[in-house]
Image: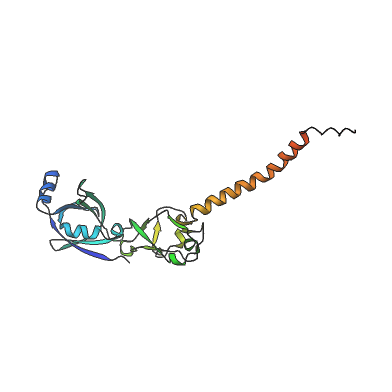
Length: 226
């Protein structure tokens, strides 16, 4: 079940670029809470709180309770706008959650037991196709993360959707058993295998060519007797 993070916010009276700039000058981060069949609510946030949560992994699937004037609203962060130079957050969009309504959320994948993978122990590389998976679920049942167990995986083995832990109460947006990660062999091993395959394919062709060349060669004249 998802952890709920409480966030304090202030109400903003005005919308627009000018009002947002004024909020930033006052040392706050402007934001909005939308959705849930209600009118959008304009808010201002403490930038330290925003940065703290954005620096923690998995904020896309984290459930927030935004308190505005003592009235809590359950929401997800859907978008963050950053300053092009300082990379500090300049605006935060929250989506209000309606009770009993399934939501679309991105859940990170955590890989474990890499030291128990024969392929990785022999120099293989974990090729991660999806660091996170987008799913549909109940707001009260959002998993913090999915877990991918790498134990026993050798070269060219993979982790698929059905292998992940923590997927019991969710449904993936992609309707198939997709690959999440693959254990790839080292580049040197792949190169040797390719060369060996090419040599093996060339060997059968070389023998008939030599035989044909020998057949075309002129016969030697018999030696003259003295």
